[in-house]
Length: 244
Image: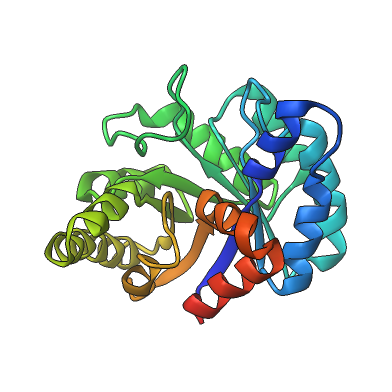
């Protein structure tokens, strides 16, 4: 079964918009885990506009007794404070994501022309701490080869282009999916695992869940949005069902 890692950033976004502690990120994490979600994802940005370092540590403490059953994935750009936090918390996985100043959300994966030396050092440091490393990339042959070259254990395929193709028509969705399938096959041939995320939802997952060798999907915005109408527990159940 493809693992679902629930991204709880949006819960923190709502909390921070008003200040205080409501809605509780920790309560959201507990509901996801108790409903059966096998993973939790957070992306602590430098401006702390949603997930904070305190959230990262509190979630880590809650998930520690559940190691082996629920995985913890921390996303972010390889800035010093984030790397120190990851090295201290030691989640199951760290997903390295390029960040552009002023962006609302991630806009693309690592460019295959990105200099490798610094990323290789980051990957080596995280792996030495016992953290599996994934890198966020587009479904592109050169990007996949770059990820393998820097030592990544997995790639996370950036799926917004697939989501937009799905919205256009079935033929566009299938053409886009075939591009992702080819990228997944290449990653697998290089010994690199496959994750995916960004704008995946209950509808487009019906096709995307058939991606070859897919290990994990990270879903936040669509899952939390649905939870506003059906409740968080039911939303998690719906995503687990479509992935089963």
